[in-house]
Every structure is written in structure tokens, then in C-alpha cells.
Image: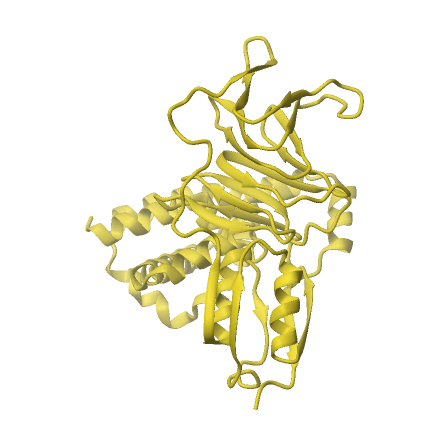
Length: 365
């Protein structure tokens, strides 16, 4: 098996990649789109992997005289492949015919297991929940939850709509409501991340790990939430830490001040506070300081940076705004504040929804 085949094999055995292919509303979509855009090699690997999955479907659908159970499985699989075919096109399928048959069936077995699992989860879901999903989600409606996953070797900096900044460590994952328009700001973390939370006393900020709930109003701190270790280390401000499952209004919290750390002790199921004595900094380093300066740059360039910062698509007529150039600095402002300045500069307006950022205007002369 050559190097490319090994890489494609790894993609096909990654449940996050398969979930993105078979589920148009996958929470991993933003990560894989960024991964594909990172290099031509990544794009080629993803294309070959998608084409290979299509070839599997063609082989599966050619079986004759299948028993009833297999026929049901084939129908479920067919729905999966329809999604894949739409995204890659029929013409790419011949790419995979050069691959080894042994590898073909190994991946086929793994993929069949994933499809069967998806079918079992759907069938066993309570009827009331199925009905609820049917009435609240449209075929093309995006999920309000956004998932960021850092599959790179370096830390990744990104922004939340409220102006908060998060540095995500390698293999860390965070999920949150993409608009953060509820009564409180909530994120769910696995892995390690450094938070710089924008102050908003009216909307407290909560971070949930497997065993802890962290509540802040505006401060900076580091959270580690791995399978073997969970802790919070405060750099500035004040942080409240609770055991998960406690009533946050009634339970006494561990209050952390700068240079203090709170650690979850699984054996006793309790939180222990101590002084941060590690030689490493509490903050996590990233490339750049999170401030982006544009001097007489095309509007396309600014919108591309916004999409990267917030993992939200910007919808606008590129031809209408093709003559628009802008000088601006993007830093710690909220997403709405950034958009206010940008759209006023080019005489446009904006709106934000689960579908992304929509820009309307007459353009620049």
C-alpha cells in the first residue's frame, strides 16, 4: 500500500470524516472544509476518499437476491451514497479502481459497521423524538450547534460571536451555539484550551467538561479536559468552578483568583484548589496576536478572514462588491461590531443567522 492509499485509508476509518460525508448537517463540516482548503494534497485525498466510497456503494448495490434484512440495509446505504454522489459527481469514481482489493474490503467492512450503527440509532430513537426532529429541522436547515476541532500540530486561535477568543490545543474539540443568542453563553470542551472571555454581566459564560462546570463573567484562564486530567488555571479575573450535576444556584463554588488552579480528583469526586506552580505559562501561544490589519484590501479578503475566524460563511454578491477596498483592523470586537464597521464603510447592511452572514448593498463605484 503506497503512502496516498494509507492516508486515504486513515480518512475512511475516521468516523468524523465519514459523518461529514453521509450527513449534510455534520458538526464536523467546518473542520473538514478548512482541512481541504489548507492544501491541494488534502483536497485530492478527500476527493479520492469520496470517490472510493461511491465505488463501494456501486459494488453493494450490484448484489442480487438479498434477503429482506440486507435489502433494508441496502436502502439505508443507498441514502448515504446519494449524499456522497451529489458532492463528488459520478465522474470521479474511476479514480478508486486502481486501489488494492484487500484494502477495498477492509474499508468496506468498517464503513458498513458505521452505516449499520447509524441505522440502529435511528430505529431505536423514541417515536416522539423522531417526530420532534421532523418538525424542527428542515432538509437544508443547518444545525445551530457549531463544532471546532483542531487537528493540526499547532494551537489554533478563533473567535466567538460575542468577542471572546479561544486558543484550542491539538486534538481539542469545542462546541457551542453558533450565534450565542441565548440567555447565557455556553461551550462544551474536550481537550485543552485557553479562554479570553469578553465581559458581559448580563450573559454569564459557562464551560462544560466531563466533570466540571466553569462559570465566568469576563476573564482569561486555561482549561484542561482530558480523560485522565481536568483542571482550570486562572490568568486574570475570577472564575467559579462547580462539580457537574450540582445545582449552580444552591451549591458553593470553588472561587479561583489569578495564579490559582482547581483540579478534579476522580477518586474522591471532589475539586481541590491550589497555587499554579508550573513553569509553563497559563496562556497558550498561537501564531499572531489575534489582531488582523487590512490596508486598502479587497472586501473579499476581509470576508475570507471573517469566515476563518468564526467558522461562518459570508454570503454576498462578489460581482457587486468587486470594486470595494477597505482599511480596517479586526481585533477583540464582537462579530456584530466588526460587521457594523465593515458594512458602513462600503454602504451595505448585514444580517446573521444559522445559515451564516448575509451582506446586502449596491457595492462601490
